[in-house]
Amino acid sequence: MKTRWLRGPIAVALTVFAALALTVIPLPGWGDILRPLWAPLVVFYWVIALPERFSVGLAWIVGLLVDALTGSLLGAHALALTLVAFLAARWHLKLRMFPPWQQSIAVGTALGLYAFILFWIDGMAGGTGHPVARFLPVVVSAAIWPLTFALLRAVRRRFVLA
Amino acid sequence: MLRTLLLAAAAVALMMVDHRYQPVASARGVLMAVVYPVEWIVNAPTHAGRTLSTDLSSRRHLLAENKRLKRDLMMAQTELERLNTLKQENSRLRRLLNAVAEMPGRVVAAGILAIDLHPFQNLVTLNAGTNLGVHTGQPLLDADGVVGQIVHVGPLSAKAMLITDPASAVPVEIERTGLATLAVGTGNLSELSLPYLPNNTDVKPGDRLITSGLGGRYPRGYPVGVVTAVAPQPGDPFAKVTARPLAHLGREHQVLLYFTGKHRGKK
Image (cartoon, rainbow over the protein chains, first blue to last red):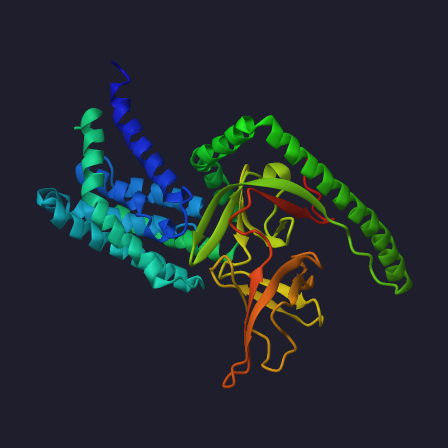
C-alpha cells in the first residue's frame, strides 16, 4: 500500500488530538485541579519512543495549540513543552531502560519544570496563579504515566511505527 | 540543541509580542480556528445530551413548560411596556438636561462551547467569532447580570473572561448610594472582591452592585452582584468587602453579547 507510511503520522496526530480534547473537556469542581497534563505526557511519550521523528518541533506546535485552546499567552506552553521535549530527547536512551516507577519520577521532574515555567510566565504577565493548582497536576501526571505509556505503546505497535 | 534554542527564542518572542501588542490577535484567530474541531468534539456529548433530553421529554412536560414560558413572556412584556415609557421619559429628561443621549445597545445570543475554570483563570469559549461581528472587549451578559468580556476572538469562536477571573475588574457602583468602585475577580466563581472601599464607607450586606459605565467597556446600569460581607480592617485603609455575582457564572449554556452603537454586529 502506498499510503502505509501515512498511518504513523495519522496515529500520532490522533493521540495529540485526544490529548488536546482531554485538556479542555469540562470537568466538575475538583477534576480541574487534578486534571493530568495530557499534552506534555503524550509529547513525552512520542519523543522517547521515536526521537528521530518527533522532537522539539512537534512539541512547539502542540504547545502553540494548547495556548490557543486555553487562552494563555501565545508561546507560553510552546516554550515549556519544547524544553520538556528537549530533555526527553536528550535522555531517551536512558529513559527507555528505566522501570516504570523510575520513568514516572523522570516524567514528574520534567513536568515539574514545565509547570514551573508556566507559573513563572504567569507571574511575569501579571497573573495570580495559586502554586498548588499548578503543581498538583504534575503529581497526578507522574502517577498515571505508566498507564499512558502502556496505552501509547499499544497504539505505536498497532500502527507499526518502528 | 540549536533547534531547541531557536524554538525557545521564537516562543519567548511570541509571548512578548502577544503580551504588549495586538498584531498577534490575527495569528491567534487562525490558531483558534485550527483548534475549533477539538472544542466542538469536546462539547458534542453535552450538546447531544441536551438535544436528546428535549426530544425525549414528554408532551405533558412540554405543555407545562410552554404554559410557564408564555406566562413569563407575558409578564416580561408588561414590564417591557413600562420600560419603554420610562425610556422615553428618560430621554426627554436627558434632553432637558442637555445631556448626551445614551446609545441603546443590541444583544445577540451566543452558546457556550467550553468552560475553563482554574483558580487562576476563569474563561469560557463561545461559539461566535468574527463571523458574528464579535470584538475584543465586548461585554457579555445573561438574564441576571454581567457575565464578563471578550478577550480573544477567532473566526468561529471567541474566549471570554468571566468577571470572577483574577485579572478582571468591573467598574461598579453601589445602587443604594451611587458610590463608584471596582469589583475585582477572585478566581472563585461565587465571589467578587471590592478592595478599594475605605473602612468608613456606607456599605452593608445585601447592597446591590450595578455597572457604573465608567471606563466605557460595560454598559451602565446592569446588575453585577450583591454584597455578602463587610469587614472593616482597623489596621488598613480599606475594608474587606466581598460580593456574590448575580449572573449564573459557569452554569449557563447561553449568554448575550452586547453590541453598542459603534459595533453593530452581524446577523
